[in-house]
Image 1: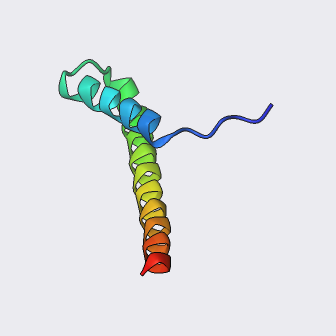
Image 2: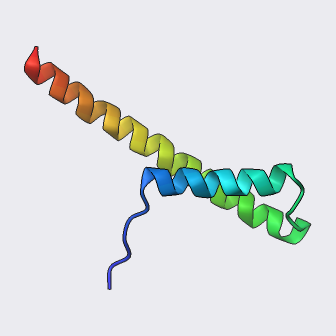
Length: 65
């Protein structure tokens, strides 16, 4: 069964959860590195999604001008 791609909203919620745990010192030092790596992956995913969306919107706007 194919894994459903994570949505931008889901990624942002997960990133916010990680940031909350880091800011509130809820993470054990042993878990911190893995959470920071996951946060970096989520940030890249969100950035890429925003860039792709921007390109698609620009294409649509260019067509109606």
